[in-house]
Image 1 (cartoon, rainbow, N blue to C red):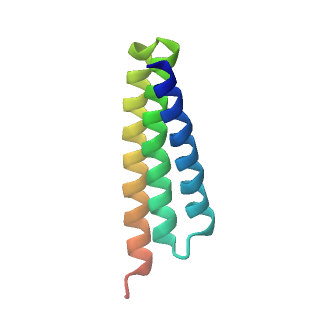
Image 2: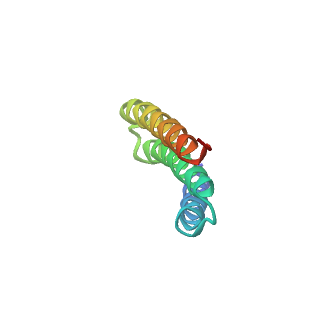
Length: 89
């Protein structure tokens, strides 16, 4: 099982790199916002996988939940702000 978890962790890190590319090069601001949300979601999963590898899943679940809530609030706040900026007045 350890090999599978390490493989999934590597694939997840690669997917985070591709999401970072979307944030940096995305043609619109909304593509960049989606990329930020993807990086936040993948970070939570990566934290949990690292907890499984290290054998300290108990303590990292709380950190992952807190980080996911912070990511959700940040993404929603940025989306609301950008929606107001793009709306015609």
